Image 1 (tube, rainbow, N blue to C red):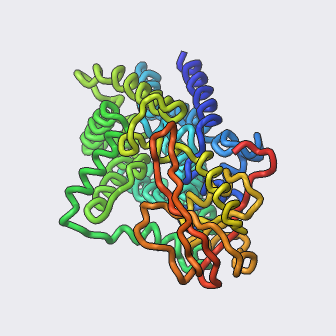
Image 2 (image 1 turned 135 degrees about the vertical axis):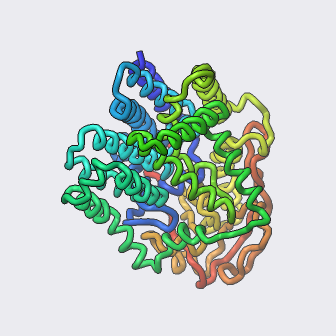
Image 3 (image 1 turned 30 degrees about the vertical axis):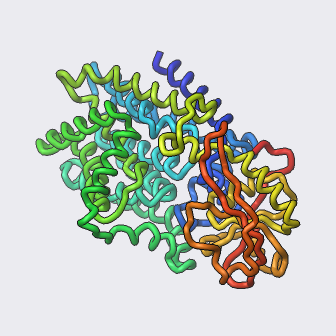
Length: 487
């Protein structure tokens, strides 16, 4: 019955992945897939590799871009069940595994993340796989598992830099479990570490060749300190987790982390693993929140171990499992419905699906019409997501260009000589207060506004400018879908 339910859920996710419009971030990662590199400014390259594989299997469509998201969610669910049965053998082991997988799948993060493609998608899969491998290592003590664990940790790091938290968590767990600590005197743990480092070495090399821009962008946030706003940032962090995990699942996860910490204090090896994989990331994100905002999706790496730990709760906690899973799936279904059909005329502030997904095809068509009226030789946008979606959606033969310094590290054709001295159309969100830079553009003339909307509800206003490109700055030609490819 559980396998049938997972298969049905996966089929539903594949359908949603096919019909949901792409978000700006997904279009941006699609550009990555069309410009292969060892790494990128924002993240390591795994998300681009997964997109390329999906496109190679079924074509350059939304489902092709997202194909591995529903499939990895299904496999990750099975891995979590396996981890539960391995860590807590006995008559109730399968039930604990099914409950953990149910809680995980009921989170809004997993419900949305399993039908979209972002760096969190492969990260969560490889993180869960490392959890399952660590459970096997504890249960069997087989040295070769260290090799697989090192490789999967390297692949997790190749997905998102947050995976660096795996290393201290697993090291602390290893040092606190005598049977594992003894294995540090043998070759396999170190061979696994070396293999993991070899996997991430191209990312290090790419950063070295690009002035460490990716490491500085992500790692530079760790030293922020704003005590006056710390309470606000910590409150936003907690509120974001309640929203993404859904309230009851978040409560159960918090209880599970507390239980794992208590049992870890008693030196239970399984609980030590769960505590290390939850408390260390949680401490890092709370520390970060003392100086800056923590995006709600960042702590999602805590969810697999937290959901598994929650299944050990007893007493009145048990009465929460069924409503937690049911309410989580109901909320996910509501978000799916709103994203596809928008039955509720919610304003932008209350509808994240509107802001991220609403009205892009009509907006791209309107931009193309404005470019034709202005006899523009090109269309450009200085927001990476806007530029990427226009490159994918705009029904025009004119080149769509990405503007701004972030594109300097991409293996994309420079457009400066192509468009120098020729008029173009610059698309710029009204949310940006400053005017276009005259260091990059000359003869800047406002030519109107376009409102991106869904079913009459405004999502965002864009200013249009007739511009001529100056030689300073960075301007690249973005890839376009193959002729006849659905957007």
